[in-house]
Length: 243
Image (tube, rainbow, N blue to C red; front, side):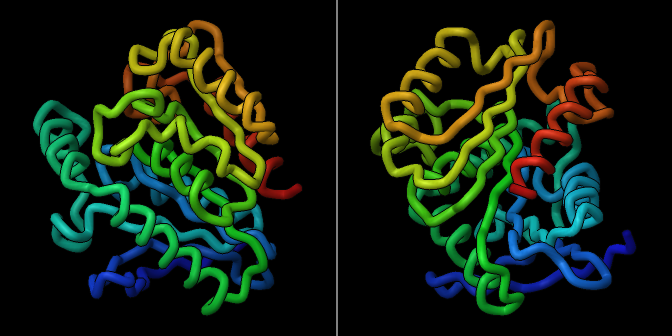
């Protein structure tokens, strides 16, 4: 399917403007619009490729620059120690209030400018945490969280004042959590806590833990890349979005 790509600007309620990479089918698109939440490194070529892939499956998709208050438009970080250090510095400047406002603004663009009927989210690592937070606080109909870290802790501002996991009862849509069993950030104890919270809240959910798979398994440019897990994850994401 042919895909139309462009950058758009999204006004946020605090008076800031957030750039977002946007892709959609050349013709009609699904009534389910999708927000992709980037990992530590920003809206890099890997994130844009995911936006394109989901758009080619029939959806209107945006990937906002959630660091927009602290980084110049278009900036993304290298996947190395320097990029990781800068990414953590930017992540620790993201507030929960600001991040929720950003997702709310992106959803408003999907619903009002493009007239989709539902908003979904797909998030990776730190963006997976943000996707979980948005699912618990906003009317998001379907959420795919890929190895979202720090959910049971207060280690990052997105998970304060109370751990984001404690907001699980607010989830009203369906949630898919994808993680590797050898993820250094999300061990079996954390996976058990996430599963217990989702069950206790009565949330519609599925947790998939891939054996022998590590954190960041989705990206070909990482040592953790696992083609089979990546293919299965994308298949599950597209099924979730199509329901």
